Image 1 (tube, rainbow, N blue to C red):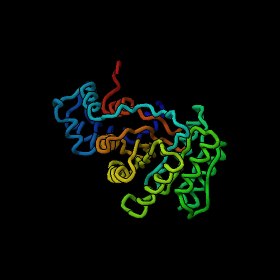
Image 2: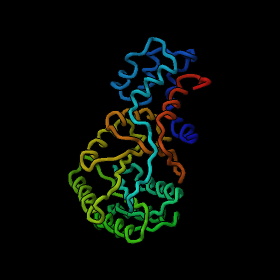
Image 3: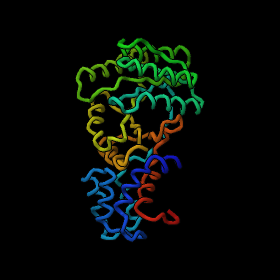
Image 4: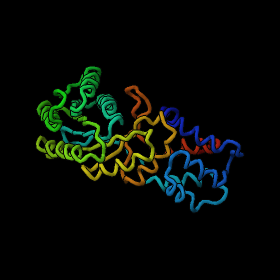
Length: 296
């Protein structure tokens, strides 16, 4: 969690500190300063109003922490691989969100936890995506199912799950093409991938993870809602959190989507995908607002 605090929210902390700068930072802060800082961190305005609504004019850290926790409904529960084999995870999201890289990082994590892994290069729209995932497979020494650019991605999903079953592999991670949430033909393709995956295994996909680009902040919520309507999303992974000052948008994401954030990406290295923890996240924001207090 140290990396998450130092890397993941560094820029978000900076924008909060810029708002607080000049204030007498200590045990209490003016309510209006807190409000401005939370908005600058890209928490939705209406949600900020709810957070500060019942706070006094001068707010202690503990009081604000309680209010923030109350408006972040998901604990950041640890993601665990279920008992069903193969445990198949379908990765979806818009172009450029970091899906393929996230799959590589997930494969690295699961392999380190003792699970066998297979990759499915279901982004058949881009040859570069197939190549990128192939590099990850070679680097991690895990099998991959791939085909030529332009081939049916649903067939890749089917073959990946089928091979995982035949070889007794624990986890199947399946990539998909980046798709705009408002393109009907791509929506139907995604529905087909899920439908065909179930032919290989009635319980597939075990989970559907939506990858959101952290640099888009709260604007990513609308696209996420449509993806959720199309196929149903089980959890969120937020990428590129280290590259944005919009870390507060995680509040907006969980409040509007009613979905847990399982992981956050805070860099390019294999280990830079870390489990999300609600309390650590909120404490990091509070540290930017207040001098760190002993016993917190």
